[in-house]
Amino acid sequence: MAMIDEPLYPIAVLIDELKNEDIQLRLNSIRRLSTIARALGEERTRKELIPFLSENNDDEDEVLLAMAEELGVFIPYVGGVEHAHVLLPPLETLCTVEETCVRDKAVESLCRIGAQMKESDIVDWFIPVVKRLAAGEWFTARVSSCGLFHIAYPSASDQLKTELRTIYGQLCQDDMPMVRRAAASNLGKFAATVEQNHLKTEIMSIFDDLTQDDQDSVRLLAVEGCAALGKLLEPQDCVAHILPVIVNFSQDKSWRVRYMVANQLYELCEAVGPEPTRADLVPAYVRLLRDNEAEVRIAAAGKVTKFCRILNPQISIQHILPCVKELSSDSSQHVRSALASVIMGMAPVLGKDATIEQLLPIFLSLLKDEFPDVRLNIISKLDQVNQVIGIDLLSQSLLPAIVELAEDRHWRVRLAIIEYIPLLASQLGVGFFDDKLGALCMQWLEDKVFSIRDAAANNLKRLAEEFGPEWAMQHIIPQVLEKINNPHYLYRMTILQAISLLAPVMGAEITSQKLLPVVINSSKDRVPNIKFNVAKVLQSLIPILDQSVVEKTVKPCLVELSEDPDVDVRYYANQALQACDQMMVSS
Image 1 (spheres, one colour):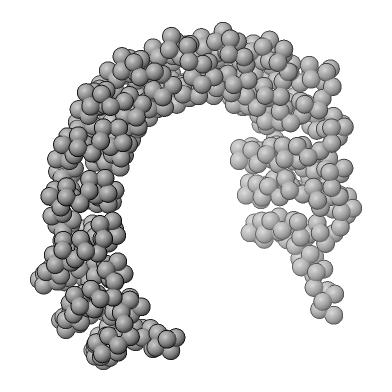
Image 2 (cartoon, rainbow, N blue to C red):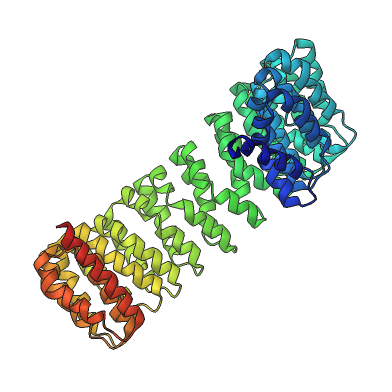
């Protein structure tokens, strides 16, 4: 009995909940529309559920957003592609609501449905929706229509295509800036579907209007259109139509437009080709690098490496490098930070000589910047420079600065240096590393900040892996074990952690001879935190050590700890003892 009623009962509840006063219940029901539709069957879904949804569209925004999303994947529940058009009316209504995210989701769902519809259905059902929205009295409908043209256009007849292009042109000249903004941001998508001959005439004249709009928010969206249209046009048309616009935009009175140009310039260069880039876009880019607005300089600085890759090294050195030098001492720390994050990539582009002469001094000045993020960005990309100038030069020029940063007052900078050490070690080799950086690695184990101590312990493990157990036995193990007598218990804890990390690298013999005795001794420590960490470390050593050692040394120590007055020590000791027993059973 329950089995027969089971599907129907929840469906009845879900349908009731669609009308419930509680928003949470309505939301719940909308999110399970597919379940309702499956239970109702395709025909009843088309005739009852969809009309019901079309009427119930004055709900809370959250419910409408969920409805717009659900309807986008609803084609299978209404009987497949031939019936897809029944989903258009509720979505058309959702395209007119005030809340932007609901409209955007409705447009997305309409596009998804339109992309699956048959050509004849698009002409009969989809294009009329687009035309009605575009002629909507309220601006929200007109905004939504802009995102649908690229789906409607390819299936239309020549006469309809002309009509659609005309309507789009009118939307680009709409009285409401929001509509013009939507038309500008969707122009690239629409243009990609338009035939080449109309692209050069009608679409380009629409584009020209948008680029001269009195609202900067419309113009800055037209900048995005530059890159999209540039890729669609032949190179010579691109130079004739797009290039002058870019050059004008790079001198626009609104900094937001200039910011967009700085962000997009690299893609625009690809569209116009190398020659015009050298002649027209390099001066435009130099202007942006020297812009009086910090935001524009940040965007331009962040693209400096990508831009230089398009140019030959000579032009980069001649025109771009002087600006880079200025930016490295810019008054805004964010500009310097943006530059630091990409400047290392210029080394492979400019080659060895120019890097040594021109870039190294800039790197050094940024490494000594008072703002930690700038220093961090340089450190994290050092390997790119190493590939170009070689380790000897790098170590002579940059290593003193790195050693200085290892003691930086900002712990995040010290952390970045630690994380970079294994890479540096592999590049510098054992001899150099021992001289310059070995002492630093030990010093970090006693840092005031836990994250640094933690990273330092991991760093030792990675160095042992890089240089091998024999090197670690000579240079790491003795110094680490010495520090177990530090009067402060937090530092003693770091040493225990370092031992548990080093043990797998060092192997069973060294672990049982050198590391284990230190851990066993620490079990007599007066601080409970140390004792329960001893239990944790012993548990991690069990798989590494021989069974006889576990029986003779580890187990008695854990048994003693399991009778400790402190509850945490007892807990971790028992955990470790269980691990011991499991190992015995499995072996």
